[in-house]
Image (cartoon, rainbow, N blue to C red; front, top):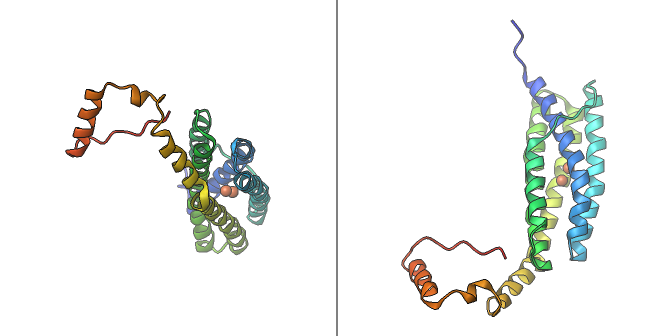
Length: 204
Ligand SMILES: [Fe+2]
Ligand SMILES: [Fe+2]
């Protein structure tokens, strides 16, 4: 009978997953930087790409500290987040809205990484892998800082700019919504006023 896997095996598996996730992000971040309009957002993605290269190096040091071969294992989680980000990037949004969406996508990736590294640090500490724990904690801190930087950019003007454009667009005579026949719109308004199903925001 095969021996059951241990926490050490699960730890190595998670490390391989994280290594692959970083490699995927190395390719995705430049695309996000190119798509961003606000200079500060472009720079945030570019500088996090450089940090991400450092994460790859640190993970290689972690593997070495454990006498393990450096190997990645396809990370489905980050692949899904990147895929969602790609489909948002294909939308026809105004520049400020696209920036707000890029921040949202970027933060999904950072939170995924924060969860992964939080677990890896805890497991490394529990098993007494001090060198690995230290390196993983350094990565975790940079993921948290990247997330906070994105929050700062969103709250520091990008969300506001996007919402102003949305509010200005409400009076736009060319929007499909304004072409809707008046009685239908009145019914919709009545429905939502009476606590009916909330209308989903239009994306275009
Ligand atoms: Fe990372
Ligand atoms: Fe990251």
